Length: 347
View 1 (cartoon, rainbow, N blue to C red):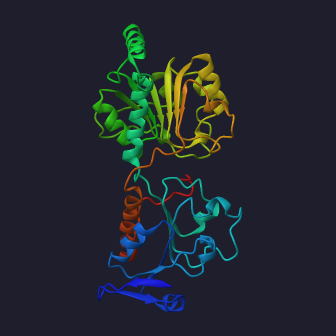
View 2 (view 1 turned 180 degrees about the horizontal axis):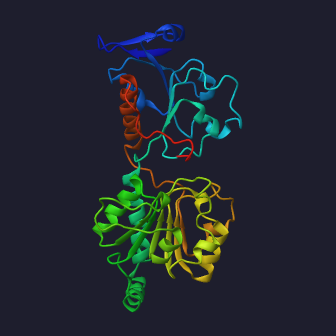
């Protein structure tokens, strides 16, 4: 069953697949991301038809009967064939993905005329995760809880003898300066941190007061007390953090990765942690995910490992759906779409 919102009458019409395909005045939209987007699309007053999703039928097998696809990494794309299926991309004119990156999707997805992504939707929760990680590392917050008078005295004595530092005045490096990087910088500056960023191609930051620019990852590593990785994974950024670049790290560096696990050579990271070059690492992402049982990153005393949840926040699905619907309105109006994926760059 397909449902269409009639922009002229304000009523929701029920149509079958055949009727939808011959209705030249309406775009057929397949939403695989959940009820939030269904409700927003149906209420947007746009000339579209919502195609019913079937979880048992992968999106690429629906390309012959839909014009627009809103999908996410969880919608079977990990089992996608290595090569484009016959007839792909069918009648598809546009795909919007519910993630900031496209590395979870096969390269042939980009054969669709337009592909857009959900950049910036999770910037706030991810930035809050980063600041939580920085504060936890700097203040040793997770070692302070006590359960009795004896531990109270012992913990007080330990802290009194080894006073923790603060974020104020610390140097924060951010590799990648998109929506997430900018939000991290904004929060970090509120804590009095000195922010230096590395942008694509070493470009300078324009208009952001107090934010400096590093010309290379080596110089960013050398200048940072804390380094946040907020880069897409591409051929150029794969294992950006490796033995050679880590040799430039400021002693005592704390590394935070909220982007993609493959940005980091994990063996080189373990060596740098073991040698004391790095004081710690907070990893929300790894390569692969999850790591196999028994992997040393699970139990390393200087590593805090979380299961790729820095994005998680109440209302996340609705925010992502609103981004799609705003782009859908642009598409219907013939206007340029926002957050178009550059196939050459891979993000």
